[in-house]
Length: 328
Length: 303
Image (cartoon, rainbow over all chains, first blue to last red; front, side, top):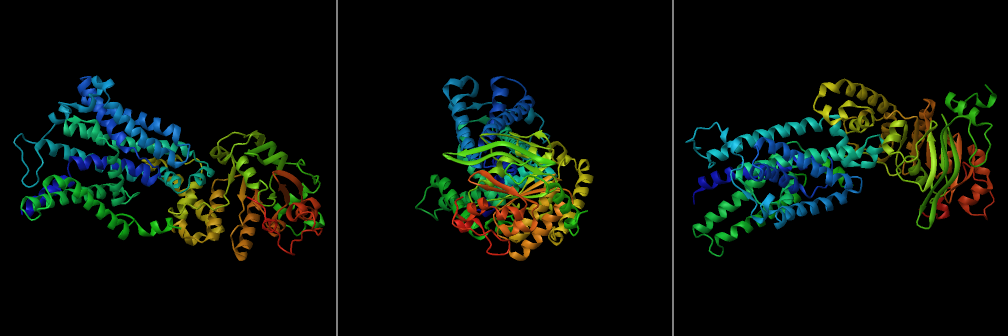
């Protein structure tokens, strides 16, 4: 077994393009769920909105990628308003129900035959997405990394993606230490108390939903640009649940929670996968085949999560003292 | 100053003087009302929880709203503060109509309430709880949030005011603690201090003494009196007669959704209608302030 290679592949995935997509969604969810307490179970819809905005503008309409980024942010804002305005005045669980339903609705809408000309149906939109972005790649044409296995193109995406992710983390840090952040944290603790102090809670919740959705939309933009393909069935509800997992793993309402959660989640998931594959390929395990690895790594991941919840329920960055206050 | 007000604190004396000649009947007009409500009603299914024809709250006084469990006190509170919508009714704050206004607007207009089940924001520090009360903060606008220089000075001023209030409520040692780590009584104090942070003209306290030990109750009563001495009107819900007698300038009694009596505490406790509402008609003795402490529980009322 080549442990060096296993490690390299694992690190590549832990910091790679897919991890970044989840990271953006998790940073957005941290504002919505971690700080404001909004149960948004449809985060994948915001990612899909971002990805499809790029797909439709660039491929269907043949317009500029830069325009599509603006459209992506507009689309996620409209989506947040559509979901938030009717539900955010109601009890918290209504948002959860509506968001999960809306995310599925959106997926079925873009894969429907009726809109095949626009969204590409079940095959989605595939082609030269993000050409303008890749043209800006400053890395030399024959560039290869000495250790990690990113292609020149992926490395460019990873560099820009991580820079943006750090920028958004800084943005969240600034927001939550401000009086605005204090109000949304108050809403998470007890909405009525905050109302009684003269704050328009509805507006704050809507703002949190819009901001978090906008950051998640960047995950979708990155997806379209990096993978050059937007497919409806990648935006299943389980995406949202992995994002929740990441957030809880890293610690909700912690500025660095999403980053820690994402890297650990993908490190473990990829690590389990690589180790298992390697064991099977080398004949150490003969009752499994290579095709089983995909699902077994998720089982191991689930086991790991259970252990985390038992021994460190506050997540990696969380404060146990704070969690204890909640359990009264 | 007349003899009977000689030993009173100035706020108490003023309230006493103002209410001296007010008729002791339900819905009686007050010389300087801050809140006036008319025909406020709220129905839950077949039950008319609140049906108040007319009520006025005197400015600068401590008014107690009492009555057995299920009398509709908290419902009336929720209606007046906008947390619940009435079926009918008009009411004003400082002569401005406020029926149908969102609760956060009423808070900004100077009508701030607390809750029966204390709502301390557990996973926030005592200081953050207090700062949340301050109104008109520019840093609460999302566009200013990332520009600390637009709100830092205001934040400092608010923090100073918060510390001042906290020391009045003996919470200044707890500034950095999580509100969730405070005791039940301290949470009540924090909630009261936080309400004052809004800078209200009238504070509405929903059972401020519920679940608080007797020693702390005395200090709570003192704090409530201080609020009046500073010129803020207090309306509070209570069902324990002892508390009411000690601090209130005026008592409004509710039963089955309606106001059945009004007057100074001594007069109200002797009112046969009030005794009947609390104990049932067979008991003929006046409710005393020091005898058996009468709470609605003795009637087995429903809530």
